[in-house]
Image (cartoon, rainbow over all chains, first blue to last red; front, side, top):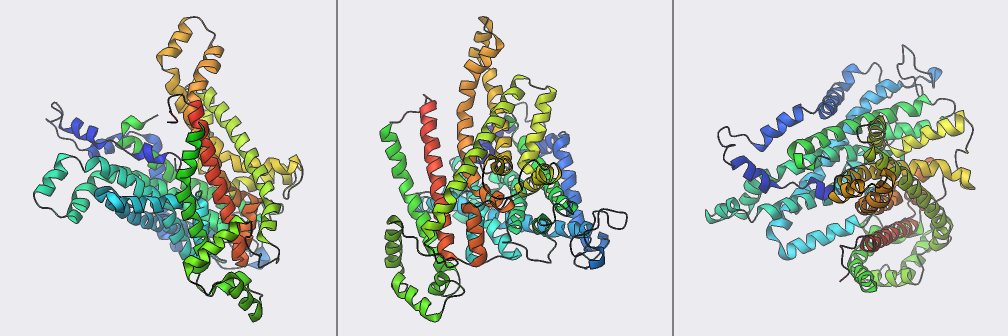
Length: 310
Length: 306
């Protein structure tokens, strides 16, 4: 799942076997790629498809947020403070009388943006480090992997907190923090793939044809290592969203009046006994979002490597 | 065995060295004057100058690092900017609370996780199997701070059974420990289940059944023992992550541990305390990992210490 534990081995997939399978006689009549196989397996997995459908719905909500939210997410209506759910305010209002439903809708935009950008940052840096580390080996490998070991010596969320302690709280800084937080995992998965790929004939052939290192890494190694990286990307979006919400809950991320889910929960904490709905809804939003991306990621992993299915 | 432990310690040294460099550098990576950061926001100009010369902040970085490290080894982590008390004093007040919380949380997680995972595997495809795996999936995806608040709402506000915040007797520990342990319990249950399923399909289990042993003996005496080997690693990893999770849980329940100390210190920009708390949490994490490696070698006879 999205925890860091053990995801390295489970997400490494043995491309060699897939290659043999693909080129084996009997399969040759109707050539099918790993990706089309995976697509048909994914389409037959109802749980993963449900996760994917919810994820797409959330992305649409995030894009259309200003048009579908019934109220301005920061508009205060103090006369209507902490009203319970009703037809006018579907999820009730918070202490400042702001419509919680509208804030949740706008929060989708914030959380998904952090999730995607954080993942993208971690993936880009991690994949480059992993490619260089695995392809060149030697001292570059040693230096890069030891530096990443130092980061892994801090437990999970603590890395993000440590980065925030240096660069200061704020929404944009949270993206940097959750991005850096994901770098070692992407680097390790990519490196593992590169190590098993680089001894194969097609890489040797490319080298003999005079392809340069950069070209080999980007056009030969990366596409063949893409499957587990894609799985990790999906799972890391979920982790990034959860981590960002935790940081905002701790007061280290989004600042008021930003409608960020973790920050909204933190606001609701003080009024838990008189207005429990204020803290309940943002938590459900986080749960649904994280669950959908995790289900999709698990489904992708099963589809791309059926042998890993438990 | 002793040699193995020593070698693991030796392997940890460069990583701990890196960790100490990172924690030392925090002060210098933050934009602004390090002396002013150490002194805290309410310090006078004289205070800042005193701190600058006493910490040697005008000397080259490597020299500063080694004198800082020397102080750390002597148990001197500087003074907290907010309370003006030694950082070690602040840590001594909070470390026992965090250890108490994380140990209770991991105990709950292991009991729930191994128990549910084992039963789910033995009764594969039963209602219990499906229910517990769905709950485990939700447990992995639930934000711990939300779970904490919901438990607080149910057991403290509605039912009035347990106190909402603070530290004291066992009743103060229940909700934070369950909140913190829930995610780990979910992961442990999933790993236990798949590991048990694998073991239950092996030949020696069939033999045990065939020679007429009761299902109970087969599961408890033969299967669990081998199925738990991979689970130990996961328990260790999860224990490590609990240390980070404690930061959030302690904030939810206003529980006076190292995690809450860290968050408050970041809020107040109290850098000596930030460094101290990070150092403690990273050291505990390293220690837990060491213990897990040793336990793993101890439980799995296939691993040689040589």
